Image 1 (tube, one colour):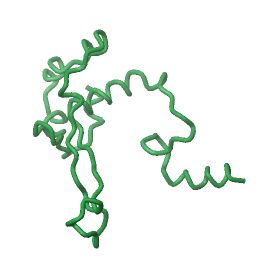
Image 2 (spheres, one colour):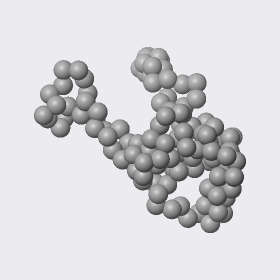
Image 3 (cartoon, helix red, strand yellow):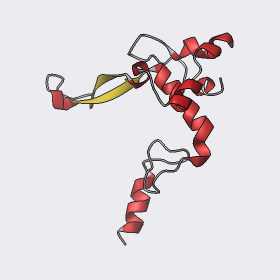
Image 4 (cartoon, rainbow, N blue to C red):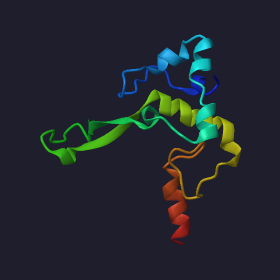
Length: 123
């Protein structure tokens, strides 16, 4: 349940039309039905947790929208996949490690730190 409360409000999954608000505002009985303990024990993940929808986003205000190179893709993951990721992070965060050179998608880190570290490494 604490993993669900870490979801951002008003986010849709693009896969099956669910919104994070459905889970954020659900009663506690729902969480009995979407338990992931079986996934952790058996190591089998339903396909719905790994689905995502790629949404094309224009690269800028003045981009030529008739050319495919003017877009970047953003993947909108399944809400069930997001919840499962949050459960894993919540449950096993102390045992998970990443490379010291990773800055994006890391707590208390910014991709702006890349410039600082690269200037140190290049000296």
